[in-house]
Amino acid sequence: MLQRIKNYLIRRAERTPYFHLKGYMERYWLLGGTARDPRPVIQRAWVGSILDRWVGRLVCVRIHRILSSDHDRHLHDHPCSSASLILEGGYWEIFPKRQDQHPSEDAVHYRRVWRGPGTVVVRRAGTRHRLELEPGVTPVSLFVFGPRTQKWGFYTESGKVYWREYLGLDPAAESAP
Image (cartoon, rainbow, N blue to C red; front, side, top):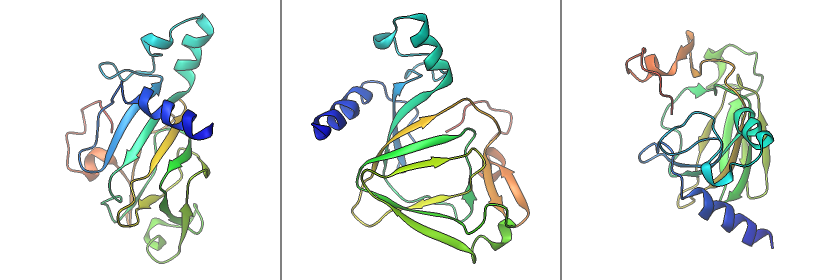
């Protein structure tokens, strides 16, 4: 039964792709956005009551198919709090031993935790981490997130660097991967 539910959620989400990160991650909306309009608006197929529309503004859900490990040597955070349910495969999550340690210590003082199928991971917006995949494993996760509470970025020896600046992109552009 759980296998059928998982397969249904993945197939349903694949009908509304979001901005894929080529070679790194395929992302699909399940609740909270559409392929053409990534703002938190509930999908047309699910539009119903006013309550449904409000839920879509408060919580968004995507399916993530992770194709490769994080390429960056520095840890990153996210613009909002989130929870991940690993549906298939798995990955190693690397994060500092203490979130309050200086980022210059992250390469030396860190934890590496396996996140396998069925694992639920809850993260605050400012939680630093990165993902490493085992060879031949393509994890799929249900990614649930709330409203943006901060700008996200990478943590270098000098501190947090806004993601666009870190990647050498136009810092004025609005879209975020």
